[in-house]
Image (cartoon, rainbow, N blue to C red):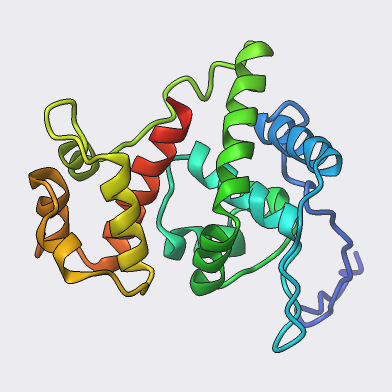
Length: 210
């Protein structure tokens, strides 16, 4: 019998779409379809920047941030890795591969839209009887400790700290006069600035959802 010689170096071209490995009934398809439909109906102003690299598609970035939140992922570093290597994340963000810094920038610049779409998505999911997102909230022991019922950071002081950790110059008196819950987060030596920002973003989202 003649045996076919196999060439291990032979290349094959396979064309795959971003959703090739996403089940047809996966909840991410609902999220993507809903956000894309809502995005087209809203008059969203994109911050045009003619310098440097072209910006990522805003709708793709919003879908990425919303899906990450629904999956309880807040770290921009982790979201960056998931967008590169995880099939569902690659599908959600249309194959975009933003850096950690870019993800953080989009979250800063378009935070109001992120919060709006998050609310709309959760509301629609509830109406459609999807139960996967019933427990989307602040998770993690540190986050709960920073904003529990008995240890609440006010909305005003959340904004002050958000601005501070974004690099905005804040009056020293405002920082000195923070109430105990906010000061506890501000002075926490076990958290870096990025981790504090992530906690504050979650607290800000909780204010929006409630």
